[in-house]
Image 1 (cartoon, rainbow, N blue to C red):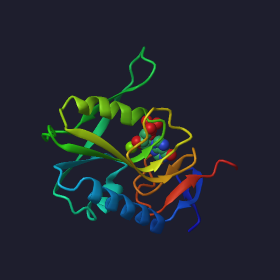
Image 2: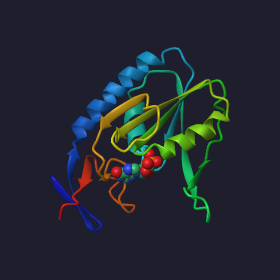
Image 3: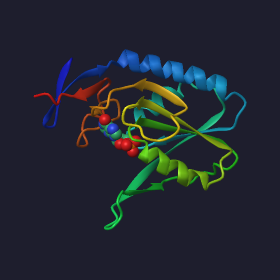
Image 4: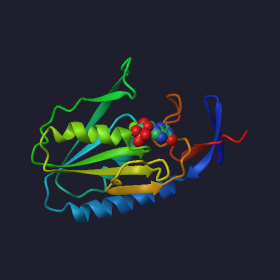
Amino acid sequence: MDKIRIVDKEFRLLVSSDKIQESINRLADQMNKDLKGRNVFFLGILNGAFMFVSDLIRRIDLECQISFLKLATYEGSSSSGSIKRLIGLDEDISGKTVVILEDIIDTGFTIDSILKQLKGYGPRDIRIAALLFKPDSFDRDSRPDYIGIEIPNDFVAGYGLDYKGYGRNLKDIYVMNDKL
Ligand code: IMP
Ligand code: MG
């Protein structure tokens, strides 16, 4: 289906399931080459990355561990931005190569905050993989190490990503139709 409705908005198809799977194949090939012989710890960011992680990981033939973490947002009454604290990481990542698996990187604020906190756990190094990347919105110095698909700076849902909590179950990725 090319057009769908999620809650109160119309969305249209942006990235088909086939194209998603193709780009995940490519990312897995790259990682299998780059990270050969390393002690790898894949860390998925919930909720959005659950589908990406499950499709990617079955194509990885490295000796590795897989876990997830979640971000808890605190709105400080006087602070300008929101602080995101990591919750759920109870494994030891010290000395390991950590690969963060994110559904989407937009401005880069979230991934920056994750990076700063993870460095405190003493990993050997940290790499960032994002299924989707919005280059026109990203305002940080360094791009993710692994990028699945670059997309325009518009709101998307499906394949793990939600709009108002819905749409995560869709196998394709849809973009919000704002020109109505
Ligand atoms: P950033 O901090 O601006 O990079 O935004 C990252 C987070 O915002 C992601 O982990 C998503 O949860 C959410 N996000 C950003 N863009 C979208 C989108 O187009 N659809 C759904 N969620 C998004
Ligand atoms: Mg997310």
